[in-house]
Image 1 (cartoon, protein in one colour):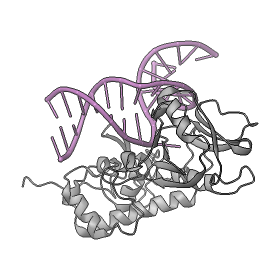
Image 2 (cartoon, protein in one colour):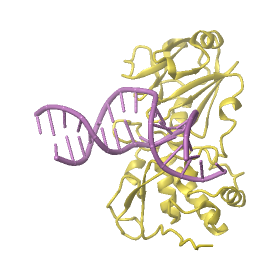
Image 3 (cartoon, chains in turn cyan, brown, orange):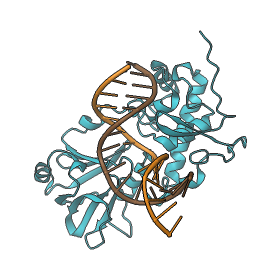
Image 4 (cartoon, rainbow, N blue to C red):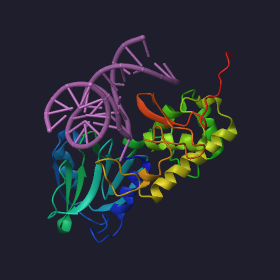
Length: 278
DNA sequence: CACGAGACCTGTTCGC
DNA sequence: TGCGAACAGGTCTCGT
């Protein structure tokens, strides 16, 4: 569910000092409640509590779709998958209906991992690389130059959409932002990565960055019952807009399935390059 | 290496 | 109105 902009939004909320709660940084962990055992992927609840108890939270970062909470010793890593959410609330507030893991903090605060579908996972590790090591580069990192992106695209020979969804290739893009970026770039979801020209690779990288940055600026998307306060869903170009006019050329948006994922694109702006017999 | 199918889950919406 | 089917922002594993 949450993609890079939604996870970034959650990270920013947790870091800030708001009317609803103090910043997460500086809080001390006092307890751990695991209500759905599989949510804590590693280690056991007993071991995790021993490590966590009395530890102060010193940093909170996002990497791809992961949230990373650094303690004085050890690192907690969260992945929200399809329906997860992470919020800091008072222990007097009502727990959300699907609280799967709860970190009790000092001064009556608690960090609640709510996750209706139970796909989300939490790890406590010494070295974050154990979980994050294989991730591809951050799309918004300036170190990722068009030259490098072009080279990455040509090192594989894959359909663009599944490749953008591959977290080993690039970290943080999901089903919504891949459709949005490909439409903005004017590229068909089934276009082959190794056949892109340098100019088109650069256009694609810029499009990815533009949609992610707009998503962050709008505090992410809130869809259906997974509401997080953002409003990017009101500005989608193609996602969920089957039959509606393409924002650029008015052609009705088409819906297909690619790699088992629902895919939306404009048949006029995003034409598949004719593949020769070679 | 690339790709498709199946698993893991619950809640909402669709179609008859 | 009711009820089963289809579908949902993600990722892993297995077989071809």
